[in-house]
Length: 184
Image 1 (spheres, rainbow, N blue to C red):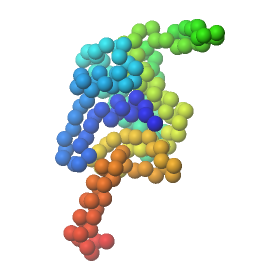
Image 2: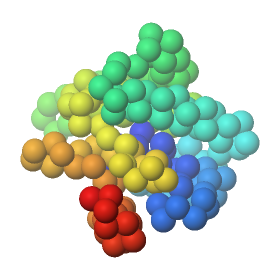
Image 3: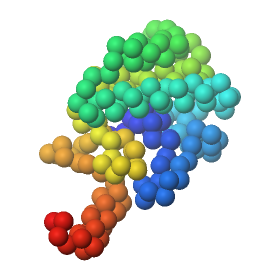
Image 4: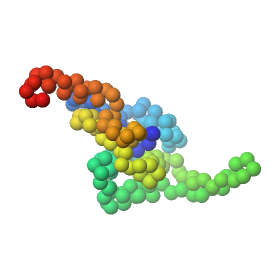
């Protein structure tokens, strides 16, 4: 299951091998274009510095909220209020659309700008916690990775963002046991 909010949070990439290297994808125009295309935000155009700064603010807010969920806690009232402010910054109107022989009611943004993009990303978080199980939010167990994911495993025990992190830490534990055989 994919959510725009998780893609945004994971745009602050940390090398899972522990080299200490990081990559700020929100400063990468090519990454932003792929992100916008993937989530249907292309109509917003290219973001300016203010829009990127707002996305970084939203990313920090969402990370706090997702980490709280991963720890079995609820996001704070302040965090929920800030998220609601982001969602409210892009007003929508109701539009009746003909659909074949019937009609459907759609919520359409007044402007498809980067406020709309931020509101949609915030709404993806709100959808995740209201329509899906928020107790399935996880932060990778690799302490240098920081990747946030939604655990879709049947028994809800996934600990790693991907097999790379799992294998990396298993090898490290194995090597540590070989170096210190009495510690096991």
